[in-house]
Image 1: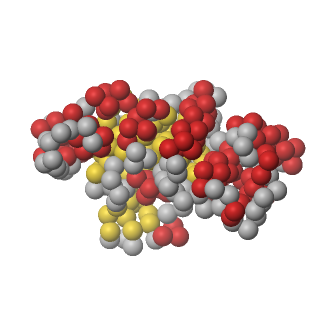
Image 2: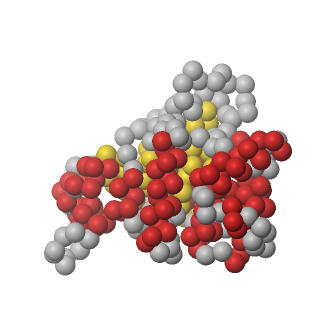
Length: 284
C-alpha cells in the first residue's frame, strides 16, 4: 500500500518532467463534503502506466467520490480533499482546475454517461476534443470511430435517441477525443444488456493494449476482475483489501461478499473477517 506520494509540482507549473511515466498515485487522501461529512478516509492506491485497476465496493463506499477528487470536480458538490495528495506522472493534480487535469491526460467517463442529449453523436464527440486543434480533432474522431465501428452510421443522429449501449460508446469516445493516458470509468456496465457490456469491456481491454491506463469503478466485481490487473476494495470510505485481480478472484471473502459464490446465507461485515483484521491499519 502507498503511504506517501511524490510532490513534484503541479500540472502546468515549472516542475521538471519525469524521465518515465509514473502513473496515478493517491496517497492518504481524506475527502469531506460540506466540511464535516467524511466520505473518504485515508486511502492510498496506484494505477501504474498501461494497467487496468478496479475499485470495488458497494454503494456509498466512496468510489465515485474518489474519481471526482482525481478529476478535480468535487467543488460543485461542496466536496474537498482535506489531506493527502493525488499525483499523476509525478505532478500534483489535486491543486489544479478540472480542465488542467484533462489537459494533463486524465479523463473521467461519469456514471450515467452525461451526454448532451440534444446534440448529435459527432457533435458530442467533438466537444470532447475542444482543447485540441481542428486537425487533431478530426484525426482523433476517426480513431474513435475505429474503436467503436457501430458509431459512424449514427454520427448525425441526436444522441438522446440512441440506445444505452450506444450512448456509453459515445461517452467513452468523447473522453478519448482528448487523447488521455489515464481513462477513468464510473460504472460503465450500469443499465446495459450483457451483450453490450461485453463489447464495452472488450473495448476497455483494447485501450490497455494501446498503452492507456484505466481506473475502473464497477459494482459487477466478476466483470471488473476479469479485465483488471489489480484491484482495491473500498468499504465506508476506506480501502480494506487489495491484491492482483487473480488473488481477489480466488479470495474466499471476495467470493462471498462480491461474487456471490458462497453457499452460506449468513452475511458478515468485512471488518469481522480475520483476514481483514490483519489489515486493521486501514480500518483505524
